[in-house]
Image 1 (cartoon, rainbow, N blue to C red):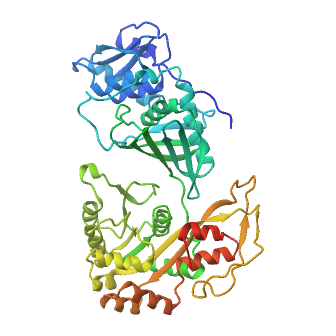
Image 2 (cartoon, helix red, strand yellow; image 1 turned 30 degrees about the vertical axis):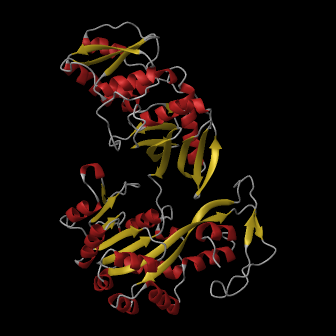
Image 3 (cartoon, one colour; image 1 turned 90 degrees about the vertical axis):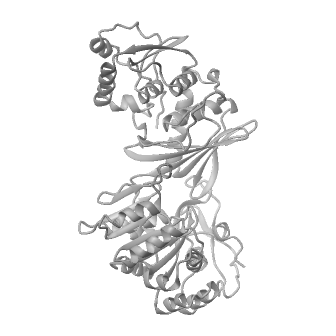
Length: 529
């Protein structure tokens, strides 16, 4: 794909002259979309920029521009700010004209890659903290120059494009004492892709923060934001999180593929487990839990379940942090801790919205757990997640949340624990020469496995991931154990007697089939002896 430098856009001088009756001097330099974006966020208009001054217009009813706007403008262009005052109605008319005629010129930082990629800040992007005093801010305007930063922005766009093409889930921008490192997480593993000059740190960070509408002058406090990106007609949502470190701000971008959806058949469940899952999803009420650590694929399992359940006859509501994949026909609510909109408060409200099915993104506290179980007990099908390592640990965790055993026995229908393992590359994998012997209770026979050393198709021997699952159906025996407040050991003995497949055995089965490797077993589970 051919890359090209950003083409900044000038404000429509003819439009201003015609609508305002004021004639400005011809712009000596091109005003970037970055500056236009900053101004319009504060209901101002960037008029003209030269080697020393940036001229902006604000409404007459404002005595002066906001301190945040002035700081950000000085930081971005390194020039003095000249302020003109225009009638409020005229300012609003021009801003509305820009919005209605060409939204992309107002919102996009740039159009690159022959118009294949566009960036758009999200309207609801907010920082975690905003300061009211600016006396102690250190703004190095000399490090951010309008002309010099076009290559920096192009570099960011190339980095984002490369990360998406490599199927990355996260991008890490990391400053150290004498270097700057960029890494991407592909199939759950970090790999370095670039190491630009350390002097570029403030420029790269500044551009990323502008894209997400963060306060670029604030470097002391963490900030969160979001922007959207379209590459090859596919929309991606980028979540950005900044963190002050010893040598500067570390920034992590989480790439959310808004159009990435999987059916239940594509999750990788064994045929018997898939049939049991579908059977449980057809129940009119009850609680289904999907568990595992961060990055184990829980969200995709929940979304696949919602897609399976999505029917016109059902009122489906979800509570998410954030909404990662919009689904037509489902009422999706994003929580906002800053205004007190958390899982428990939204869940209480949802119960008055006549729901049939409720998806709670995560059970994080006792209150959310209690309300979820009560909802499942009163005729709703509830789906949610927990950060636990196994199905039996999930039951122990719920007990620690002071959920009585009789309520769990009555409401809980199914627990799925899961992990993601990397797939061996189909182009370079080969059988290993020797089998591996594990203790009989782990794997009763010599384990014949496959290895791969990497090729042009995969680079490191792996391509893609597959889920492994441990499923606990709340049957009569498990219900009685819950009522009797049985401990984890007792529950594990019951499951072993019933022949349940553990996560480890599911993973070893993939190794035996040549789908994954022994190294992946150790990476996911650690020591297995």
